Image 1 (cartoon, rainbow, N blue to C red):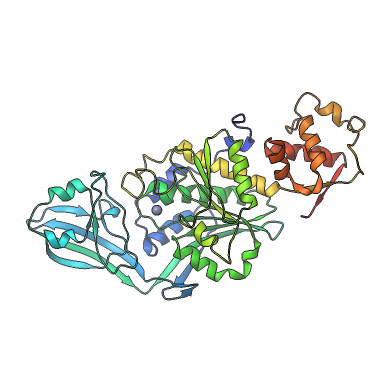
Image 2: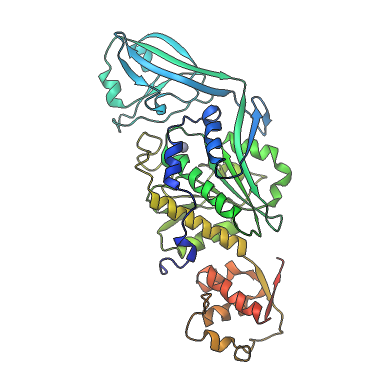
Length: 437
Ligand code: ZN
């Protein structure tokens, strides 16, 4: 493992309180659609110039249709003597997502058909949805359900599933070129902190970061409900997809586990860029091959689109014990972990934005560095920019118009910024010119 913090950006702090934003968004009930999603996007829009899109129920999007909109006001199970046992107001995980309205008295056996628990984690409330199930249901701790042994219960869910719209947020920050980086996260989970909210907070801070700096590439940030959101966006933007040169799906970035990066379907610069930044970050990490399950990379990497999009996470969805339970809460998500995720992705953006290609302009053979003051300048120690003599030799050797700075950094196995620094020295000495590639 190379030295820790070889990327200067790894100490960088975001300009918003990441954990504070997770905390603010945590109580809101979100789903694929509905007022909680709008409320969430309205809070994000305080930080960035977010465009809010509403797409009508029933709109055809690729092989799918935009679903009915779901909104819920309350949901309770009460004993026949009036004791409230389960209450949506206490924890929004208690209601199966997209539950249809119900009101009545049910036997325990009837109610059991609509109760979801985790017998192996008896203290935790599971997170369950029935988006297309035409059903209603309650989620609760197994212990609570076991304690409910009356013959009858009074049940009420005040919700509606009706024509409305699907809501998503988009921010596009144009660059000097038409090439774009696509960054997406999910906004459809209720009170879960690592799954969804960590991605929302880190992505919002990254959007603020990129908005405030010069950009060679454009950056498109999408806040989407899972699956149907990505499909809807793809259907509405097919004509401009060829501009997307790099993409990252962000999820589960707030827990202290090591980083995991899932590669794009067909291999892409983003895969090499993420691996390179992680390798030199000092953080532990693992690279995972593409598979057709997971988050929205499975939409962006579906056939014919096959966009260069990978997925960056810390804990991998579905594999950590708190996943999709009430234990994915504000304690699981750590400010330091969120900050590291932010800084790491910032370094990835900087790499992508500065990944230029150069060609020697001074003729053939190794140039005479001493005559240009470069040999003396860098022998034995790093320049202010961080390049060593060896870095400059690598750069000048590979500046053939075919190797990007990332190619060079990988080949030399040194952090990207050192090849960037070598490029600056060579440019100042008029040894190279930038080439389009
Ligand atoms: Zn999830």
